[in-house]
Amino acid sequence: MPSFLKPNLLAMRGYTPGEQPQVGEVIKLNTNENPYPPSPQVIEAIKAALTGDRLRKYPDPLGLRFRETAGRVLGVPPECILIGNGSDEVLTLITRAIVPEGGLVAAPMPSYLLYRTLAEQQGARCAEFPFRNWRVHPEDVPAGAHLTFIPNPNSPTGTWMDPNALLEWPTPLVIDEAYVDFTAGHALSLLQKSERILITRTLSKSYSLAGMRFGFALGRADVIEQLYKLKDSYNCDVLSQAAATAAMEDQAYMRARVQQILATRDRMERELAALGFQLLPSQANFVWCQRHDRSVQPIYQFLKERGILVRYMNYAGYGEGLRISVGLEEHIDRLFEELRRLV
Image (cartoon, rainbow, N blue to C red):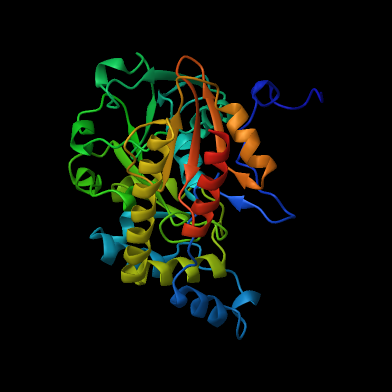
């Protein structure tokens, strides 16, 4: 390996995204994408952004139009919003802003595997602490932690907890609300009560914009102001800002698609349970399932060979499972046709 590269980079494994096949007919139920297209208003906004000389010029570095729209929808001041190239970028910026080299990041286990990668990129350590009853408890946070990530709802389990229980958290806290639109609660009220809490969100899930890469963070205005110093000058391009703003404006469309997803998710839970899978009640756009009688890795492979991708995950000390995204009804029909054949 080249000697000029940082030791922590050489030592880290890196985050492994879900499979993204480039050829062939595949039913993708492995990366929690929304099975429905984005709002028609999004398509019109992208077309408008392609006209004239919009692409010749740099985009708005501060995303003011999106921040004003999102602020109005969510009931927060625009200056409390940071735009990012997907929520992964804003998670990265927060880590850089708070965690020193050699520092300590805390996250519950099992949860989003990127949190460990973000710590390692910073030359820091990541300490995992357990869920108890699918809740987290302040006394379980490792001593000396500089930052805690808590996804709510959690991935891969889809479990959700009352965010008010997180108000007195002992470290600066990021509440990752990537799947918040699929549940009934959110943590926005906590921003007025603590300067140490940040919330991250994405337009990849409920707004059907995974291909656009747009996310944002919410926090105290003076904290967000400092985070803007760390981001790339023009981190969100013209098209993504236009699409994100239009998507945020069309709340009725998003809510209607969410209701369709929730109905299909309920069906998936019933049918998986009938086939002998063990499940946790999901508050996201996916279902986490395990089996006590056999390994699920052969099931994952069986489905893959038949053109159906789900996510196989194995967490040390917790076990393996399949995370299955909610898809179109016809895709779920195919999924269960194959599962019944095997199970």
